[in-house]
Image 1 (cartoon, rainbow, N blue to C red):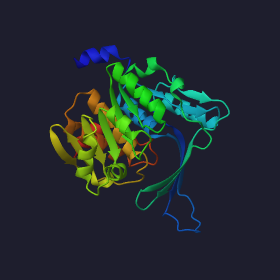
Image 2 (cartoon, one colour):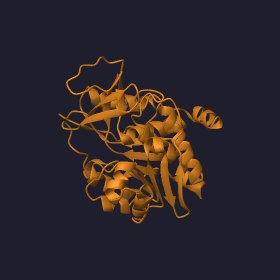
Image 3 (cartoon, rainbow, N blue to C red):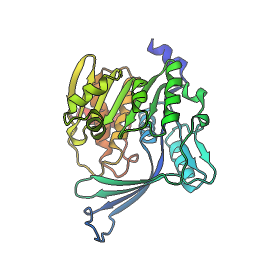
Image 4 (cartoon, rainbow, N blue to C red):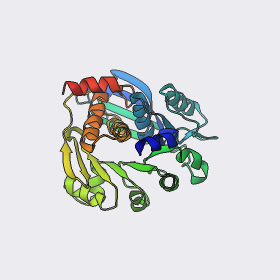
Length: 307
């Protein structure tokens, strides 16, 4: 049955969500208020939850397409070129005349690898439902959305369901019409902060069970260095995070999403899929930025064989 699905859909995954140009600054330590600190490293990379997940999938060997919005500026050209260089199809990218492509300014603490992010989307109008292609949405075996441009995400999720595909939702903070998005989601992979806030609880497992009540087949709550909590009809389990030298945690959750989807494409058992996704995210943390450090399938398999 899976082989029939692969034949039907031109793309393994179509992703719809916001993008950005990431300006990454590594510091010897995070500065105090009114303190001046010299950078130790700088990098400019493509960013955004869905694009980073798609780059992960492409590097692992999947066929993917991105649908999002940029401005008609240097940043927009940078985003498009970065995606295409990684093998991510970008023909669904909407270029908005007179707008500025989103930017994210990332400060990385050199002693811990933890980061702080300030995002600037003030120069770009939201992607609208009329700007997305039903044919493109229906061409993916899975649809990955972040839900930030809510109306477009809802329409895409409905189209995807109609085509026989499944929907994966990546959400880090509460969105408008969240209950509707959750009701259209097959695989829900969320941050700890969102799960605890939305579930109105301090217990990770209770939050996972609350979210599972909205109908997804699987709920994964990512917990950073604490690993993840995973819930399906088969029960609940925890996956420990791999212990690695950390340079930068930027994009680790986004990379986890991409690697999780790769496991779905391979029809792996949930435990194997989550362990694999944890490994890919851990390896990424060895380099600065969300995309440069993403490993290949061979690199990940070598890593797992040693753990």
